[in-house]
Amino acid sequence: MSATILDGKALARQIRQRLREQVAQWVQRHGVRPCLAAVLVGEDPASHVYVGKKQQACAQVGLESRLIELPQHTSPSQLLECLDELNADPGVHGILVQLPLPEQLNPDEVFERMDPRKDVDGFHPENVGRLVQGRPRFVPCTPGGIRALLDHYGISTQGRHVVVLGRSPIVGKPLANLLLARGPQGDATVTVCHSRSAHLTQLAKQADILVAAVGRPRFVGPDMVRPGAVVIDVGITRTQQGLVGDVDFPAVAQVASYITPVPGGVGPLTVAMLLQNTFQAAQALVQDGNS
Ligand code: GUN
Image 1 (spheres, protein in one colour):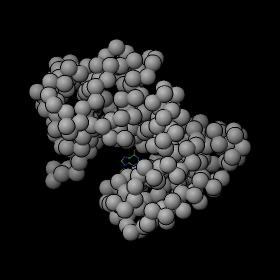
Image 2 (image 1 turned 90 degrees about the vertical axis):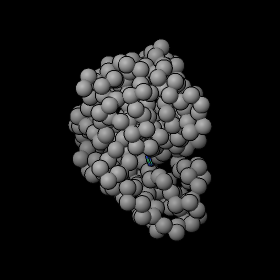
Image 3 (image 1 turned 30 degrees about the vertical axis):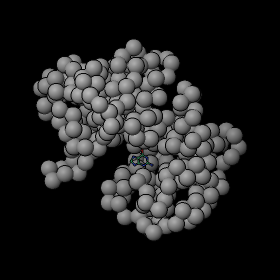
């Protein structure tokens, strides 16, 4: 294997440690404990695991968390009412509605109802708009985690060709916007590919930095990777052989210069960014007298 492993787990630990100290100081000064409310609708087992991890991470850094569990058949008006209550609650600083939602619930409508100042995922249209304008309030957690990983390992995006596989509103679209922004944290040339893209392999092969976020296990093989490219794997699928990413790790690691493992790559950083965003939300709300 030639590629250097981008160790997201270790970096996430460092970020949580730093945050823990900052939160402790801030709580002492303001007498307010930042609080994340997680809304979990339905029975999806993976969502239960992810939300459990997020709550555990909150506790580790000294953030309060609340879990609101709603049944699978929750109606749109019930979920919107729940959001109204959380929006109005001065003890709640961040709100997370775990995706995917049951099919009767439209995520766009749900995120639009959220107070954008508490939208720690950055999915409210106002926050999406701010990101597109290059002045984000909350950077969505997975793109923020990828950015943190690249920064930590000194991998610049300036002038480089980033190819993103996947156009989801959670990863592909916000990451493309983040890396397009002017300045040292961006300045990339970005290509976003998706399930209808022609010549996918040729496009992927042009990447200096290839990000796979398609949710198809081992979709990216060595034929799609330029020798020396940086490969970021966002995918995570539970298979009979355990958790598998979108990248055929052993084969691609022979070709890439840097590569993220699954698990232990992007996932832990996504959680760390959620904690940072929650702390940031609490700071802004308290400063504006809304908490
Ligand atoms: N489901 C998978 N990833 C995410 C995420 O980043 N935020 C939310 N709310 N749900 C998700």
